[in-house]
Image (cartoon, rainbow, N blue to C red):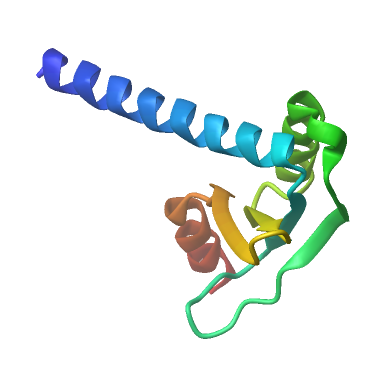
Length: 113
């Protein structure tokens, strides 16, 4: 059982490193990054609010990570994503960086009723 948990952690860590590498490459290419959040995400409709202004962040990975952390800290119950656009190739990459725990939302709903 412990070996299975370790394998899952290693797999998750490898995926995180690959994602961070992709974001780093995007920043180095001068892609425009927009941090967005919304309180209720569904496949039918979601109104994403911008956090700050879209920027190239001048390739500064640490600054974008700090901005994402600030957005997540300020909106702990919201979904947070990165919307990365490469205008030179007209391509877009969207990465969900925070999904609120479903248990906390369902328990809040139970508290209201």
